[in-house]
Image (cartoon, rainbow over all chains, first blue to last red; front, top):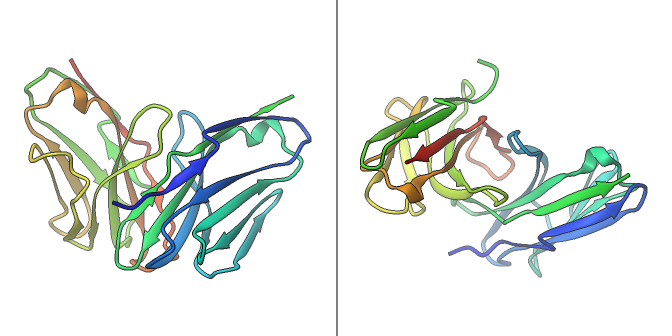
Length: 111
Length: 115
């Protein structure tokens, strides 16, 4: 069983503040780490796919880092806006294996 | 079509009936995944295919659940003798390749309600 954990489960952020949250995954047999954004009543959409230790990816105000040796990834949101409110899902892929999702971090940005 | 298409979008059935959920992936996508998602939870893996080969079915809850992708394109998830605990959103996703960087494209899901 692959254990992919996300913390916190939920967080409230004031508009304009920055925030970050964690995805932890097995440090062995690493192949890729995915981040998805999921808005209620919609389907999850890919944000980043990272494969190399030390990878950093950025899309607008959202960025992610990856540490495969210790098995964690951070997602950062800079200057949060109400439209950033969503559940952020990470997913771990082991070599030759399935993509396993964490439980998600639900972000609510308050105006 | 441009995206992953799932049907039916909503299915209400009585306990004990069989249901079949269909997924039509993006054309040319090699990998196809089935997930089950409870309200407010992350997707729970059920099974996945590369082309027509079922690579992993370890997430199927029991032998009432089965999936096939006979021609490497459209896939069907079948639940026999449905039970109330099978009620959930069933999501299909496809990716272009089998490698690490293949992001998943999700369908809109099939919401199953078992009465």
